[in-house]
Image (cartoon, rainbow, N blue to C red; front, side, top):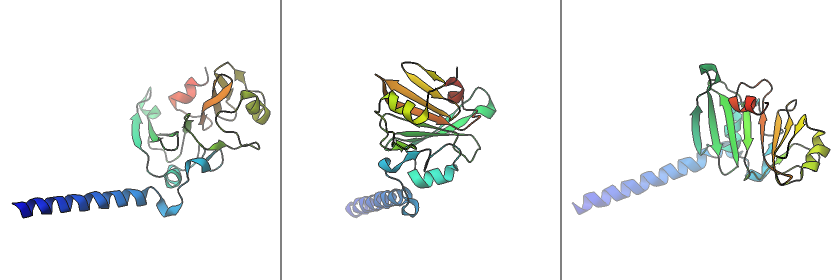
Length: 176
């Protein structure tokens, strides 16, 4: 009986170790995974990119969710990357990124000459991207670029970016 328990624990520990090693290897396919500070929205990560290339760059998501749309052709999936502060969205059955939500924990930057990061004042966004099509105390909209910046106390808190003509419900809600 004691030998059986010992064998059980040895097998359990071996299985746990092999799963941990497999997960570690799978989060860095080919050793090309980006660290949170290396991500540049609009450069090495942007809407329209192939979903498989995104997973190669970011690794395995923390969570995958299916989101029902207003109709079957508007259903989508979400890939959540808590360690990167990102949510990647794609239409169900599509091989491309449809939208990216940049959370307040995002450490990377946005494609720009001045290296825009979360926390900058809204004047820096205007200096880089020009006047937005609409500006409130909470949102700066650049629909022609597919960029939507969310502000808090005049500073960049988070952002969303979408592919042109996106069918995502969230994209439609950003353009009232």
